Image (cartoon, rainbow, N blue to C red; front, side, top):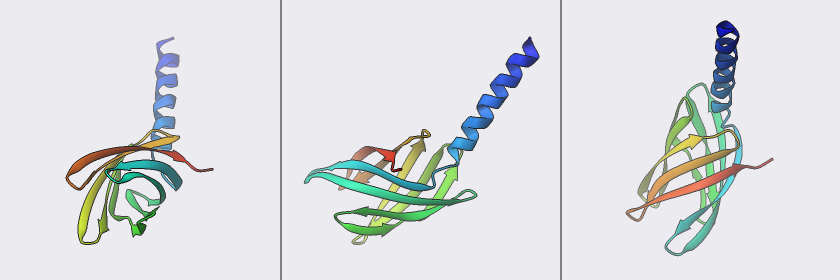
Length: 115
């Protein structure tokens, strides 16, 4: 009985790890900034522990720079008009939470996968 339970737990953990590496695709969310809400689309591509892609908003298209993946967390930077914005996120399968700093204020946004 113990070995069956252990096998089920290990299988569940394996599925979670596999899901954590699937950031590939398009993600949409709303970023709340002092000037109002901004609709943002992230287009991510992963290769091993590397994250690339770009972020689209009304401010234009920004490339994802220095993207790294560790388990279900990831980091990258964006550059907008000589401002470097470090971003860190967590992957939850069908959603992402990304934290950054905009004009000195922390911002946390939720993104959903776009089918």
